[in-house]
Length: 179
Image (cartoon, rainbow, N blue to C red; front, side, top):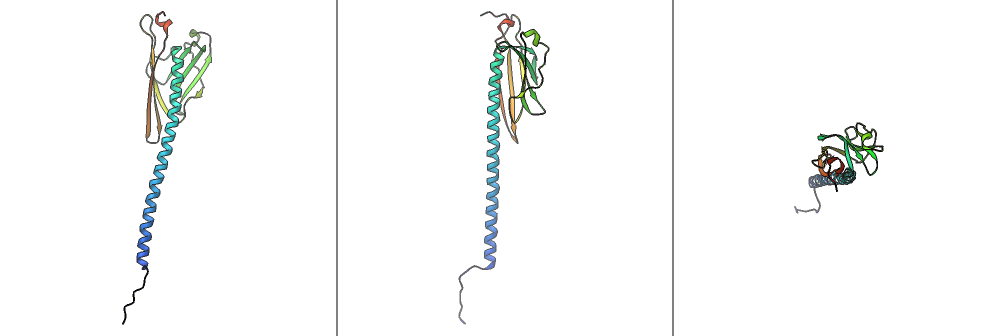
């Protein structure tokens, strides 16, 4: 009897090869899905951070020409200022229902009419999941010019970014400093 060898694969070898191929493809799919999800989250965080930085710069510009009408202390959700350059009473606040930084304003002609007034409504200054607080040291007569520190936390999934800035009020009239 002659031993004849046939070229080819057995059924078992094909099944084992297909099983290994399916495992490799499944693992690769999971890795690529996670990479694309992380990329999307990072892109969203970057966009939200840019919006928050713009809002902080805009608030800083407003605070430099303003006096604090209400809100003095640490960890405040909102602050009301009178902006002398625009003659407006402006309220900045963190809205917990929409997770945005909001701005509301009313036109008024002098600081005294802004004191005790709380503008309502407003427009969102940020996007995404933003929370934060204001720390306010008001200007004091004959002692010092005040400052406002804004702290924000931007979140997307497990990722968070913290931003903070401090602006002096330049409220020379209240503090009694002459130029």
